[in-house]
Image 1 (tube, rainbow, N blue to C red):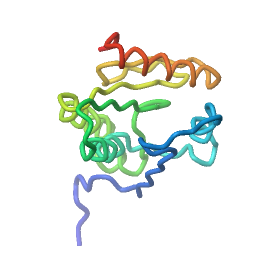
Image 2: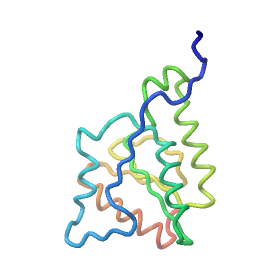
Image 3: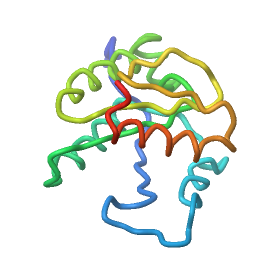
Length: 149
């Protein structure tokens, strides 16, 4: 039995929901954001599939305006997938997902700590983890007021 030349994604997926869109968190401040930075959560990132999953959840909602912000510390990474499919496989997939969903969802990215090139229509750099909360709120405020993009 031979090996396929481009087998696709080879890593398992895990989608974590820190808060539902309808949840309210009086008095919790930025604690849900801090959970995202826990070392045990930082794994290989399959950004295109994560964005597809989030977009499907957003598009199932009744609101007429939908915003999605991807928080990222770099390019999509899954070593096994990249080794089997080529170095641009996951980035190409992310770009295709962005192109597919940009007309229906306002997309942005908050980059953490690394000033890499972003394929998102709107992108902001948070230089330190301490700046993450403020930079995310500034990005969302800009999107909501139509200042971004």
